[in-house]
Image (cartoon, rainbow, N blue to C red):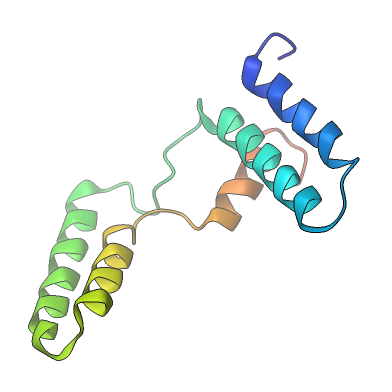
Length: 109
């Protein structure tokens, strides 16, 4: 852990953040926390909600068909946003990603 560049960088960011105020402090802290949790989760299970790829692909396909059905009533930017959200539907929310890393280490159980 002490020899890992990402952990060291994150520790440095947290130390640096403690000398700042307001949004700068929060931003650096968030970046450091996200880096640490991603590093912990590298060796963990999938970050997907559904492990069954057939079910996941079927849902995405069906939902995209529904969006296309309404495409003529949506602005291009609305269609793009909705399509992008559907395509990441099987990804866990960021809040779950952050806490699951600490759960895996037995810190927040």
